[in-house]
Length: 432
Ligand SMILES: CSC[C@H]1O[C@@H](n2cnc3c(O)ncnc32)[C@H](O)[C@@H]1O
Ligand SMILES: [Zn+2]
Image 1: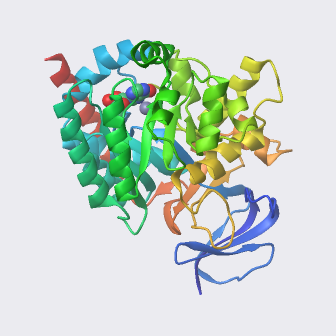
Image 2: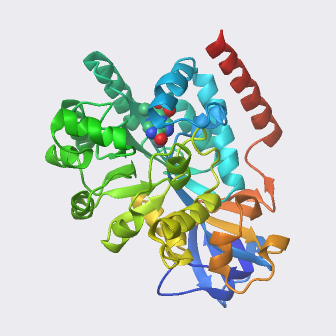
């Protein structure tokens, strides 16, 4: 007998060989999809009737700082440098491990509720984020953030902790947790340090997660310091490869795009954060046209201010239409692919597509809603009309984390109350 069967579903497989199923069934056994089609096995321990819903791959958030949920709305309407140096970093200096645990749990809850099944994270006290991921049942690629800030000793200490974290958590939570190295950015870490981090990552077989060319200020600072931009500097030290996840990539030249393509770098596009911090518009249509793997991320909740990838998909689609004055830029299917297939490729997980043999990371979206009626085109609705709150069921590794809007893995009220209290106490410490 199967573990879970989802039946009577409109299935958006994201598998180009299969297409959508109008009345599909998905069979899940041992965390994997074992059968998918119009006619399959009928009996399972749990049978989910998905009539009136769309079943799709879980969304993949390829750039966030989960515990920053505690800073939601903390410092709005500022540019990146001012926001980081004068507001966020002073506040983060007061963070405790317990804060990060509570903020990360809140993030996991928000992601489960809005259909995100895996995410890539870079932050501090990462054991706590890993514990939250383990408890919540989500899948994640986690990295301890390394900020050298022209202080070699700090760089060494951060790198040591980064290595300890990589080794301690790689493959934990039944394989749901992967680890990466997280050098913050080319303008906060020196060339020598970045080369060293790359070397350590290579030794450990771990990936690298880094912010790249988020602002024009970074581009100008790099040109002044190195006589070249971040992408050229990173390429010259042999940093790039398919194991690299580069967040933002806003201020790219055509030559930079060619480097990213040639090296197989994975890009995380964060349109809401880039718009809110007024960083600029990433050349996403050009990157996609040239074959760069572009996925979607929210960034942290202090620059977004939520983790809703449905909102991110709509924003991406609209931003690139208006910025190119072309309504055909980033059509709905392409954006959905960024949030699923491309995200899974970036994190190296066997997810992002509903296909036999893939891990069962699946979400069910309730379509019986006023704002989703009528429905002529499911893909259009998921990108332009749906919200994270329309997700009714979330499944990761075959385990049901939320069943018909009820979160099964976390005490929702407790998570919210504890995060609220932690955030209030944290801000009181910052202001003391
Ligand atoms: C080294 S841990 C992560 C570090 O990054 C900060 N951060 C959050 N959002 C951004 C962003 O958009 N650009 C650069 N840095 C960002 C976060 O607050 C942590 O300090
Ligand atoms: Zn970030």
